[in-house]
Image 1 (cartoon, helix red, strand yellow):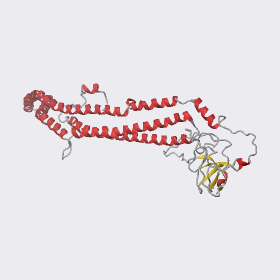
Image 2 (cartoon, one colour):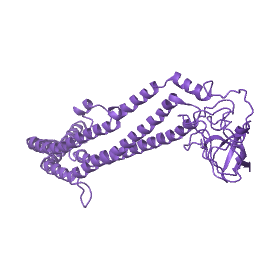
Image 3 (cartoon, one colour):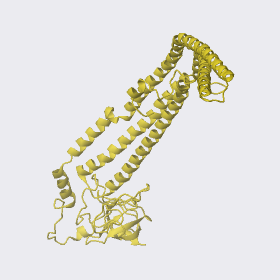
Image 4 (cartoon, helix red, strand yellow):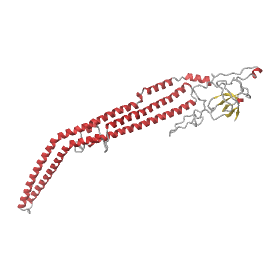
Length: 439
């Protein structure tokens, strides 16, 4: 309905008035409209619930995908933890949106459905009990006045017809006086017709005035009865509008995550984690594990020692197993138990499941192809070998395997008889070169 309330409240002569016979039907129709609006509101909420669920699912999928990429990538230390905190934020926000979806469906929709059931009672023959009662009330209130109105309309019509006849008779009489062909006897008859029409007009006028007076006397009672029925309709509508307002406030409360303490906590914790990122600590860690801070057994002059050359191995080996090389590794790989899992090599597809492919932010070395976090030195290169004997790593940076296990040799044998390799589970480390054979 267009136009403001003020424009409609005062009434408009060009509109059909409520007081006209039968025009109460718009008030009755409001019951049907109210029931339909409840259905519309439930449909609206169910669609919003689907949107909330879809958004939560997308956040979860996005977080899972990028968490794996970050953990597999070269970022390390506290900045890696700060980046992963963004994924944690997405997971927790996803949970909140799933909660919004549940509240909309389980609380708001159910609340509207229950109120609708209590407020509108369907009849076996169709329609609603409340609408039928209102229509019967309006009909009963309008019936006496409608009868008087009908009598008044008939009296008015009779009076207007009499006036028309009187006017025609007067015109004929006037024409007869000017025409020589009209005899005096005819003129007399025309005059008598005019007198009779005047008498009929007067009688019709009196009857019309009387019926209008009776209608006017009946009008106050008619208005009072109609207003009583209308007020009953208004009371029902007040309940609907009040309920709708309360329901919308509940919906707003469920949708407005800024009022949820958990929502504010998520971003406080995210900010705290990001601010905790320590650039100097991260640089120090990298230097100690992958830079100048690493331990190095620098070459020194060593006298020939026949006893050392034939020294027994640290651990008893199976019959036929070759001697284990010295554990003085040329370059220890450092602490691989750090937060960064850059050296892990489990394959992971970067294909996105949504219709739209996200932009790939990668360096220029690989032309933007493949995972930007994959390192050329740890994937796609190496020689597959098979273990000839069981070997139990003696140091933290050594691999352990059983005879028959297969692994990938990533670096050739050094001067002390050690190779660097990678197990199929992604772990990298050193192993004796003479314990394996090429496949």
